[in-house]
Amino acid sequence: MPAKKTTILTADDDPQLLRLVMRNLQLEGYDVITASDGQQAFDLIEAQPPDLVLLDVMMPKMDGFTVCHRVREFSAVPIIIITARGQDQDKVRGLDLGADDYLTKPFSVDELLARVRAVLRRAQFITNEQSQTLRTTAIIGNLSIDYAQHLVMMKDKEVVLTPTEYRILSYLAQNVGRVVTQDLLLEHVWGAEYVGEGHMLQVNINRLRRKIELDSTHPRYIMTKVGIGYLLAAHPDSSSAT
Image (cartoon, rainbow, N blue to C red; front, side):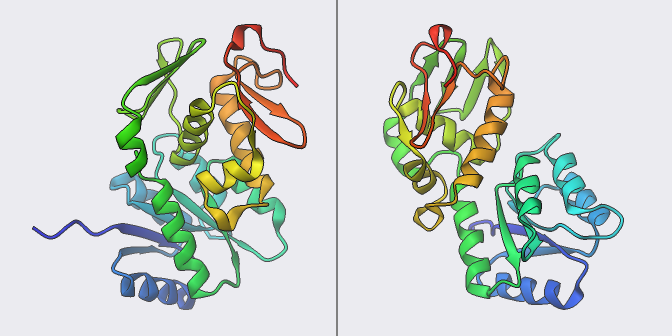
């Protein structure tokens, strides 16, 4: 049987742009579902989650931020938000609500396809190299990471992470007790083309802390080394925030 095609939902209230995106994705071999407003997009995702969502911020009935927030209540499907040029606060807000990446209008077809490929690559539960080496469970304080099952637990309670959050945490866990530079994290999690985009990393670190720290403003697990990067504390019970 032929392999199942990757399904992408793209949502935008601009019919011309919607057709352009759909056609170019189809030419790359993806199955494409379209939505012309936020409510329709949410209903489609809820009914049958696709492999990836392209989500315009400004849409009628339900804006992209609301869709992203509501989807994150039940799904870790990868989401790329689409923002207008110069609206940096929209990028940060979207990432903070759980989006995995962003595109800025106007964008080229090459940029669109590159971002889609990058997010789908990151969304793989276990990369080829991980499947060969990470078949155990890491236990750090009350935090456990089961690499084989892609499962994160805190005090015996499952912590639901997006694929991006999981990749950050698992990479920090592989280097527990050691400082990982911002650029190394960005390259490992997002790809070399994202080196220097520190705001993406910071927003995701903040989201991770809200999920695993008792007090995200005084972290004991994910520590910041100002101007350098981050580390996962080897002994979080005795750590102090920096």
